[in-house]
Image (cartoon, rainbow, N blue to C red):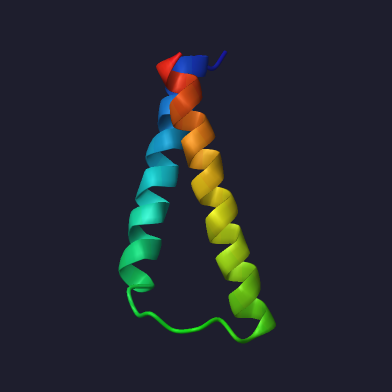
Length: 60
C-alpha cells in the first residue's frame, strides 16, 4: 500500500524538477506563433496553476 504523503512529495518533486528544466530550456523570449508553441504555452500556464493549487493544499 502506497503512503499518500510519499506519493504527494514525489509528485511535487517531479513537478518542481520539470518546471526547473522547462524554465532553463525556455529561457529565450520568443513569440509562440505555431499551434504547437501555443499549446505548450497553455500547458505551461496550466502547470503553473496546478502547482499553485498543490502548494496551497499542502499548506492547509
